Amino acid sequence: MSFEDIKLHSTKIIDTYDDTYMSFIQVTPIKMHSEFEDYYIILDNEYGLVKIVAISNVETNRYGTSLINKFNNLYDALSKKYGQGEKFDFLIPSSIWDEDGDYMMSLVQGDRILMAAWEVDAELIIVLQVTAESTSSGIVSLAYEYANFEKSIENKQKTEDSYF
Image (cartoon, rainbow, N blue to C red; front, side):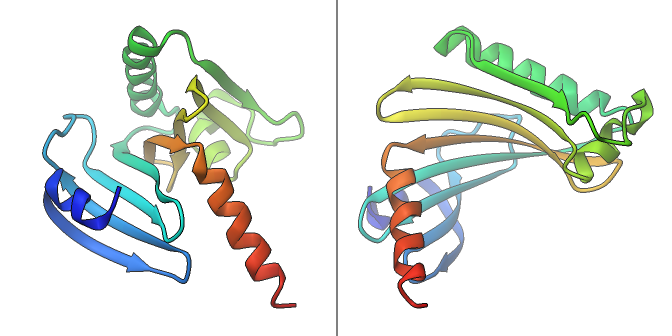
């Protein structure tokens, strides 16, 4: 997929950022899901389209109730289409944020993981993930990672490592 293709499938290009290896493009797609506010497309200079990300901003309580509910609803919808995803929902054992009311703080501190993944085929992995910006605000992201995404990251790392 090229930048021209993206224009054909979007009603608006909101913002772009280019680095040496990739272009990060914020778009308003023609078809939008009501649960997501922001959409991003990542194009690699060598491989083309490598990733599409949809973002949902969620206001919640310290228990993460709204965030968890949104994650679960999206997980169920994706599971209907792609089958059961592999779900990861855990708190690292050494975390001090282990009380019910610490859910959001454990996300903020990086002590908690809530995500799911679907390996659709050799070319596509779908990742649904929760992160937190604060104890009252979180993000549910849905990413479509194409097979060339890992190659793209590896090439970038190899090139940057060669600078040493």
